[in-house]
Length: 429
RNA sequence: GGAGAGGUGGCCGAGUGGUCUAAGGCGCUCGCCUGCUAAGCGAGAGUGUCGUUUAAUAGGCGACACCACGGGUUCGAAUCCCGUCCUCUCCGCCA
Image (cartoon, rainbow, N blue to C red; front, side, top):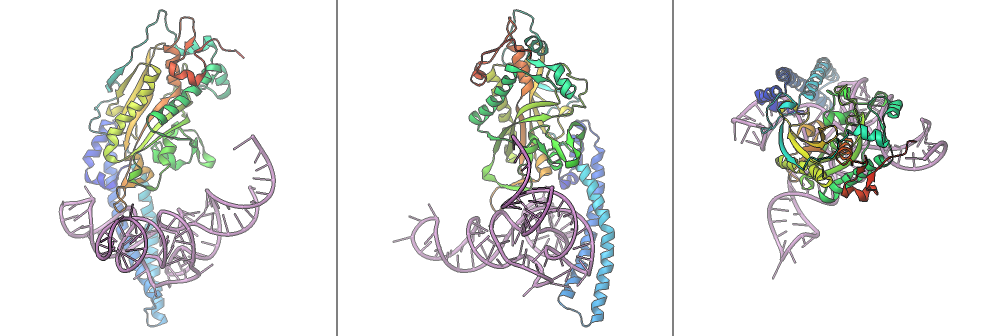
């Protein structure tokens, strides 16, 4: 969400941001027009309320000579009150619509974000690690999983429909090991504090984080109780300090949390239907930072490295992609995607998306800080990134570390967590 | 789920219809004093919005709103009434 004052002050700047995101900039004009009406009306109402307050005050202080004058004052107040009552609903309607418009305007775009139309204009900024070489034709993970009987796709669908699957035996444990490894790694090596969060949240949390009102289609919910399954841990973490003013000496705050993520994936219908690349439910370890505004840019670079360190430790080849303006997420002002090479399906898989959200979520969720105990509150900056998304790391391990005999070799660092060194043929039942 | 109690400023806590800017305490900020980060004295300090002044989204001035949230009664509500949410205690149920 943006500051109305900033928009009215430099509308062309905000229109530009919308244009480079391939969105209609006219909404800015709409907002400014409604805002003009809003200010006018507030002013009018304030004056009326002032008059009314003055009269009530007079009565309270018995500043009238007789009962007749008192009745006159009451009469006057009632007349003013009628006018107030007629204007109030008009104002709330205006405020409602302005709020709605503000909620659907995407974030600004950082100056160093490349301008582009879509993902084809993204820029690969970094590459690390060797793609593995095989003496045989490496298989995609769904075939490996089938051969070793470690994923049951059919019965997953039987339980919950398409895009659900059952992980079995050592693969289930591998995923559990990865979660623990990620959490330990970030808390021990990068000083993140671990959180265990609610997986279901109220509507306002999703508004605060930017998923609502625009992306309702992608969320699972229980409408009756206003309970929403989290699409990412970013949602609950963003709202931890909602409506709070933090002292600046606690900043920056680094948090790491494991949650499952639930997404309808309607937009991606038909894409990535094979295997476990895109499910309605997947696990993720999320990195999140609350920082001073002037440090968020630097903190993003560090966040990206924190995520990359996991891939280094796992010995997986990866690259960093800087998203162009047209491919940026709604709430992000700058995003780096981290992609890992999957040797079987021969694809670069996005395992992390690290974004500087700046004050966009902070405004929505009203999260502020004070530089000193006496200074004015300012909006905090928030950043998020996966560290990492589980299924795609699992894919990379299955595909990159598959052996000629069909078994999977477990990366060295994981062995203390898995308790085994390879995945071989699993039980059927 | 049932019964009862309650939700006040950073924290504690007073306040059941009108001295308007919410008592008091703790903590906080500034100043003074005292030969040291203790005590004492004095002063100050909430958040947001609108208007005005201004180069200013700095500061000043004025107004309006905010005592969980939403509605109602009243000339006037932290205070009375209704609804919602939440917390605590007891009971029930339960991993």
